[in-house]
Image 1 (tube, rainbow, N blue to C red):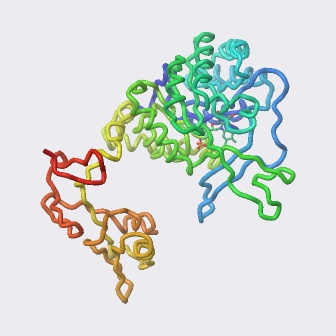
Image 2 (image 1 turned 60 degrees about the vertical axis):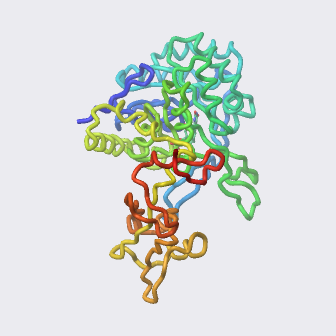
Length: 435
Ligand SMILES: Cc1cc2nc3c(=O)[nH]c(=O)nc-3n(C[C@H](O)[C@H](O)[C@H](O)COP(=O)(O)O)c2cc1C
């Protein structure tokens, strides 16, 4: 059976599934039950410095986007960091860690951008026996207006400086959590590396307004007639998070920087994808908030089955497995030719493929009088839109043309070797025979 144990920056956990810093990890009651349900680790809800209490809104703090079946696809929140007293959190962290020594316990921190503030809080966390700290440079609302959270995470120099302070003032491993609300994720990640970070985690939430109340004329969630932007997460952000993880993993200077992947992880498959693109483990928030702590059990059994089927015995065999296949567009094989194929036994004659292709793409699907839909190979460019709009899984597939076959659209013979073809250096869209 596959061994799911992970060792992330020296922190051991029985599986790669950690709960991300958020409401599921904000108190002892939650974290004990999360561990009992099987979570390998938690990142405790972000702590701030002792002092004036953090006060949350007393109205709706979430907005959402749903699919047609009302499944939650995206969640938006305007919650702040913990609003519980520092000493209560620290006491609870210590008690839980003592009782679950085999689980990872990371403490998320966000204090003002002053060395004294970091120096003051780090020994308090160390004293709890926690395994490490995660620096929250990501929250896009509420705290950033006070010069914390993403206000730090958007300035690489600040990230480097604060990370260095933390590394100088604690022996605990330091994970830097990155905000996606920037242009180039590599810059803050490189800054964290320069500052001495042991790892990066990403993504925190994305700036968002999910909807507007058209009677009140205010963004939702609406508090007494007003709304503010919040942080977006859940399945909808997974593609953005995957790309950011991949961007870091494929950068040579960061090839050895451990990554904790976060953003829309809902199933074992999402987790496996993050890991294949470079994440050493994953963190989960929205899926637990939607389905409860036991959602981790499907993740554990699914990943274990998958690894068994692939003959992988350790998660390290999966981590970065897809990174060598990450490429840039100009290196894609333009000699690879596929055509759409419609399985008539599965087709329900809804005509979505026809409407999409005829009206917006390449007019490559024919409709007969009895609503039989067929692909015109001499028009099909294999764009995949018909596959994506078809409501029946696997009804339309893309079939690769064999070497030696002639593409009826271009008259080009499919070459046996990618190496025989190259893209034109000044115009990557033009394929020419290689020397
Ligand atoms: C209600 C809520 C509160 C959150 N609070 C924090 C926080 O205190 N610190 C932090 O680093 N991230 C916080 N996050 C962000 C999550 O840790 C995570 O990065 C984000 O939700 C993406 O993961 P997901 O798609 O699995 O939800 C919060 C998210 C939500 C939904």
